Amino acid sequence: MEKETISFFDRVHEVAKQIPFGKVTSYGAIAKYLGAAKSARMVGYAMNASHTKDVPAHRVVNRKGLLTGKHHFDGTNLMQQLLESEGVVVVNNQIQNFEAIFWDPSEALKN
Image 1 (cartoon, rainbow, N blue to C red):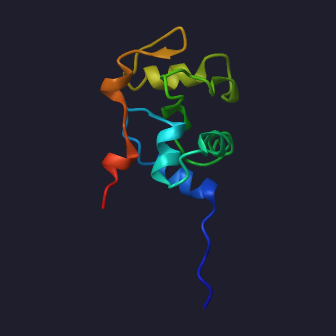
Image 2 (image 1 turned 60 degrees about the vertical axis):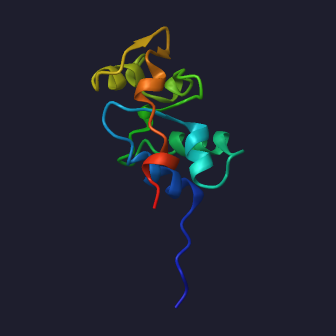
């Protein structure tokens, strides 16, 4: 019997689904956790492809806490609105208290 291969995008989506309500992580942190530290851009592509799935893509931002993926959400401010509905404060596309609400999958998902 052949072993099923899980795509990189699917692996990214599985990590993103574990980001807790009110927390955020970065494209690079997910890439690093998956053993592909230089693939932050590919994580971004996976987030763009996740909108038809139950993936909280709004919780994934760049390494500085900027909402760089916001133009991939419907509406003018949907990414920010989703974050704010979880209690995340966003000013000028920048998450406030980024370090305090940052979720690191390499720490949180240790075996």
